[in-house]
Length: 182
Image (cartoon, rainbow, N blue to C red):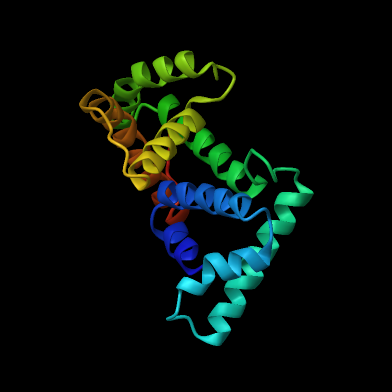
């Protein structure tokens, strides 16, 4: 919970990837708060009793949301989908504006990788922003599992990572003071 709060304030892209990881953790524990407490939260020995309770409540609320939103087996919570929607709207505003040539260059630099990934994965119906996050999440999981990532893949994700990083920066800038797109 505390990691999520910190990431939400500092880096929306890392926050979203973290929240997807939390969704998968909850699924791995079969939406059972007792398993989450025993197999995961028990590792955090530095939490105060209040922090532990708040964290358990947070996970319980996420479990309830996953059940009610019918994403217990796959998919993402609406709170996470809303971030994708906000990022897509921001992307569209930045692309439509004449004030952000570096952002446009980053996007068009990442576009070939995005198109190729959508074609290879058969997910052409998923928008470009979510496709980028799917790629970054997949790479993150491979790294966590200690699996080797080819040089070509590492080179291929650089433009996508740079584009999402720039979009994330604009997201936080826009939250602190709305961006003038005109």
